[in-house]
Length: 290
Image (cartoon, rainbow, N blue to C red; front, side, top):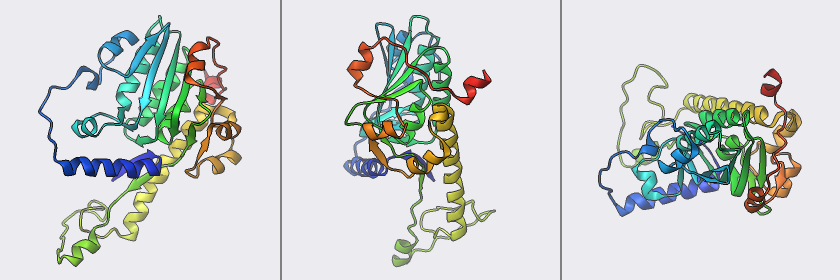
């Protein structure tokens, strides 16, 4: 089962791009893993940048980029198709910037429809930890959707440009049921397993109502975590009455997102970089406990 927190339109576009790339049949030569693909820590933001992480340092500000579909690690297919970002790379870049005494603030430059659930919680925790030691500003530059909003909600402040879209809060799981096609071709799939759910989603088998309910259970659990994390990051700004409206999967233009308290300010990346005024961090339960 693929577990995603991603804007549906971008998800379908991603599927098409992957199919088109596979149809072309391009193969890449074998290569050694690059340093930035490895789960290691870096001592400074500049060190992280030299090793290929998505960060650059400008006048004491570490700009960490979240561009495209979010996945935990970049593989050959992701690099070939393009338009992906590694949440592990972003996490390591943020950790390096947070520990770097020469960095006074972190700006997350975000243009992403969201992506895979894998590695997302660890990224969010790293952003929340970083904001305890220095301002972290999440700045939209196009789209802050789904998993990207999950991450952005942990920043000190969320900003977006006037024509940006924000939201798409929710989780989805995609399980293909090819049983009808197999039956038309006269193909029977025999499953030998030790449990009713062990082979759920196996190619050519029908997805039973019980299996569908179990997949929904998993999706619901991720959604519960989504709500907990957004509430943790945004504090009292988003109450229970607001949640049902903002969590139906829609996206909103920046001005409407601000009125819904999904973001704090409508401004451009250039304006954020010119501004030296620290962000006013929303209070959270974790702040009170600390």
